[in-house]
Length: 123
Image 1 (cartoon, helix red, strand yellow):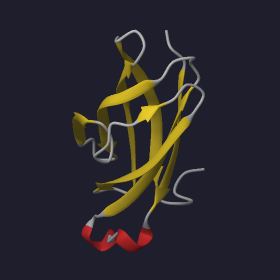
Image 2 (cartoon, one colour):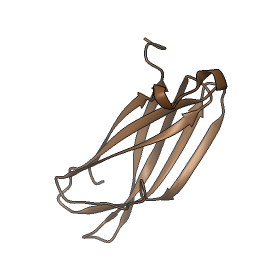
Image 3 (tube, one colour):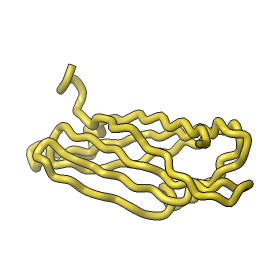
Image 4 (cartoon, helix red, strand yellow):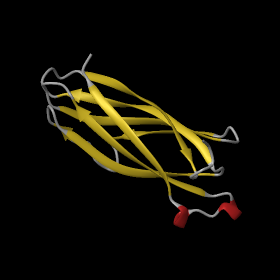
């Protein structure tokens, strides 16, 4: 199994949020590190997003932020995106599908769940 490391850094975007209207904006930074000896291309994403009311949203599509980046062996790729929730707390998890440029094989890498929360909401 190829070794692709995925690091997540979620953050609250207060200036784009309107708590009085149950609108909470969160951003997240993803860093994908290719720890293999071969170049890979990120082909697809699949996210499952949940808020504290139990509302679930599924997002699937090609690439990330309009790109299908090739990540060279030993290199990293970082991007930022965001999501709106109706509650001050939620979580998301998912997976990326990669294409190994050498073997022509597709493989999936799971993204561990991470919390989306306004600061100091949870300890």
